[in-house]
Image 1 (tube, rainbow, N blue to C red):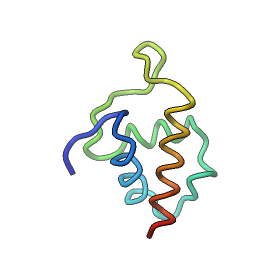
Image 2 (tube, one colour; image 1 turned 180 degrees about the vertical axis):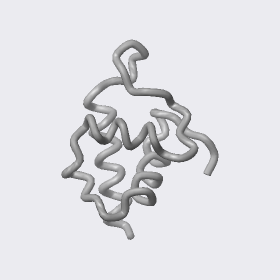
Image 3 (cartoon, one colour; image 1 turned 30 degrees about the vertical axis):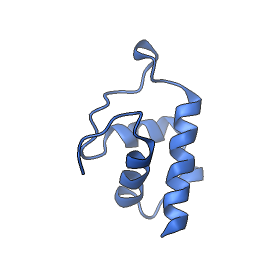
Image 4 (cartoon, rainbow, N blue to C red; image 1 turned 45 degrees about the horizontal axis):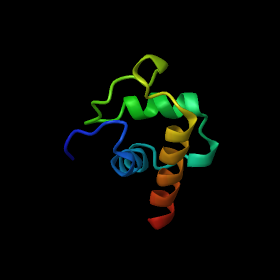
Amino acid sequence: MPAFGWDDIEDIAIGLAEEHPDLEPLKVRFTDLARMVAELPDFNGGPLDASNGRANEGRLEAIQMAWLDEVNDK
């Protein structure tokens, strides 16, 4: 998979589904989710923090919902 960042919600969801197949997306806290995303292979979005405008609950919720969709589609 080519490199991706915080705006690539679908790529993040696929990566999370592949890296964490036994986790239930809705049971993951946003703090843990942000860390898990930053640790994905091919992720080059940097840390999620307020200084770069990437830290927001809406973005993490969108990632969580896309991850849930990816899990349910399998």
